[in-house]
Image (cartoon, rainbow, N blue to C red; front, top):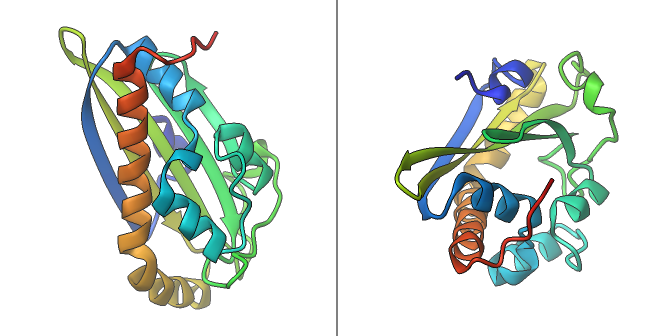
Length: 181
């Protein structure tokens, strides 16, 4: 099955991918993805505070309050989030956009990020959960600016994704995932 992220950001200059195996069903993993709250990750809270972002509610709904948008989801396979901004600036220069505008957005001076969570059965009750982050900069100037930023923050960005996967795995394996319709 093709990944939804390929539809939303097939071309990109920067990418990071992480995965884990979860001892839970696909439905339990999906519920944990949808309900995970990054407020339980001290490192993530610190990094959000450094960017001046709110840290009270770091669920998907809370992330939408800071500019992330759910672009698409396939219940049993994948969720794709989008974000648009000047990520290399202190505030991140996050811009509001409608999800249906994401593919066509090519504003000079901005960058687009697509982040997915993908879950698939590996064997028995085990599910492979992966996340990929892709960034596309429409101009050479924004690409150069993002390149410097990426080299500085990439290790921390990776730690956020790893911690996010760890929290989702812990929630799904504990049986505390709230069912999502």
